[in-house]
Picture 1 (cartoon, protein in one colour):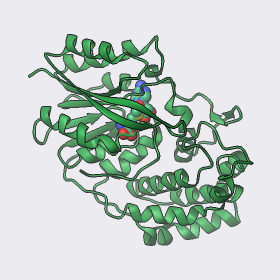
Picture 2 (cartoon, protein in one colour; picture 1 turned 90 degrees about the vertical axis):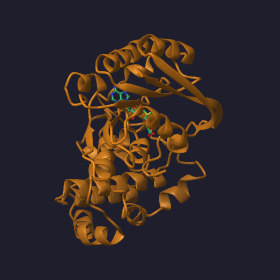
Picture 3 (cartoon, rainbow, N blue to C red; picture 1 turned 180 degrees about the vertical axis):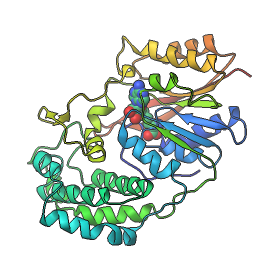
Picture 4 (cartoon, protein in one colour; picture 1 turned 180 degrees about the horizontal axis):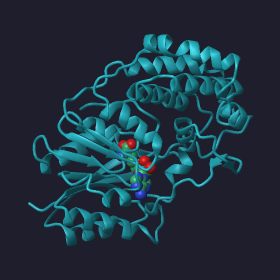
Length: 342
Ligand SMILES: C[S@@+](CC[C@H](N)C(=O)[O-])C[C@H]1O[C@@H](n2cnc3c(N)ncnc32)[C@H](O)[C@@H]1O
């Protein structure tokens, strides 16, 4: 199975690929099209690339950037050597004469040290000077990946560690440019397929209003399953990619107007699943859902709902120690529901 080292991401399915990918293969025609509707870290899309044409979607732009880098991109690669050649001069220019300084002004001594913030600004500035958009996305992915290594947090960006925390000193001593170069080497041999993959960055409801998914055979749905909004946990990644100098609020410095997913509200989640099931049935698209036995929408109810919309529904429960990013490990079952009309 193709594995991808991307960002540290809550609920990422890298350890479950061996269960998910075969389910998708069972119901999707050979050389068919699969849409990963909420692609997150893109690890599932990347594994699917070996077998299918892959479309990705996610509301967050960092996820879209990863899709461009490793799913849509068919020929660009990067390495520490290309990074030194393409970026080092601009990196030094920004250090000496600051054009990009949002991280330094906003996040010094929070999620990163002052020096790490200056490095993030300068790497980001250097990336903005790269012409090819796929190469740019690869460098942005390497930068996000490096930021996930040095972050002074419990594993996500909903909060940063207090200054007296014993891990702060070693974390804030880490050299971001060096970590970035190491990550660039990780993306020197991205799996290239010959299919015409596509990436979208939309609320799925907007995507459903277009005809972009007309030819899709199977949708893979891995929606949020708790009340935790991804836009709160990964706001820093959104900002480094967009670099749009947002207004930030609260002690944790969240972006203003961040996206709030209806999958995270008990009162709204059922309607979200009904939207997706209705769309799939109307367009004759198979559906594979990853969900959890401890989610805000009860798993048995979800299965019953699927049975109302699909002729054939199979459920697999997998015992799984899920990483809750700093909250310890909980015994959870990951559930895969496979729906088709054949
Ligand atoms: C559980 S994560 C997906 C994890 C992914 N399968 C992986 O392995 O990394 C859920 C994703 O849904 C996205 N999302 C939530 N609501 C959405 C919506 N209405 N439209 C599009 N994406 C949405 C979030 O941004 C998040 O990346």
